[in-house]
Image (tube, rainbow, N blue to C red; front, side, top):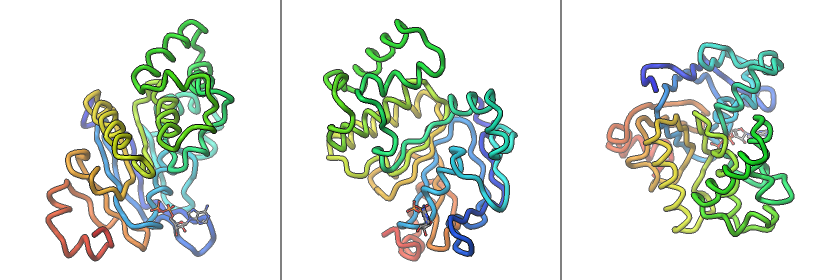
Length: 248
Ligand code: ADP
């Protein structure tokens, strides 16, 4: 891992779902390899939109986004080798995990990414065993992902992303709708990823996640702009600012 390497660079990026109504407003940021970034801001401030842009699911109408120096455009994703390269490296845990689950069983859900990469059947089986033990979802392997609790669904969705060993993990409100024990488990997985040198970008308004998880925090406001960047101490020492952006 090279902590000085810039993975993502966004230059004056704006996004509109609907003309004239900005959903992400002139964002210019960099994310370095191995960094853990928190995106904080009230509902509707553009956090999910920013994550989807980082994941190459949405493309800005204004400004540019680069990953390892290559611009992320619809055209560049048409190149199968770049598409494969990027999709192996960068994953996004959606806020609504139902949108990510599609297989008849949890086992198939876990196998899908590995199958796409070209793993053999026996390698897939080994990986599934290892991963389901780690996430404590062995008992769910033959169940339908759609019949699980929210916490179980989230674990399966996260496991299905992490099983391919990506370098960059984008997390959209990962602790939402989880009970306290599931939150603790999830936070410990995220800590492990961080220790393993992964790059992690997390959108959250769960303030219990904030302290100790992030190297840098990007604060967004209702104008869909990033209004402050800093470490935990810098951001959370300014109570007036936190009130202003509706975070407390
Ligand atoms: P956050 O994740 O901070 O809650 P979002 O990125 O979801 O914010 O939303 C940013 C803005 O874009 C909001 O004003 C929201 O209403 C709007 N928006 C989000 N998704 C859509 C969509 N699919 N169509 C139209 N507007 C959207």
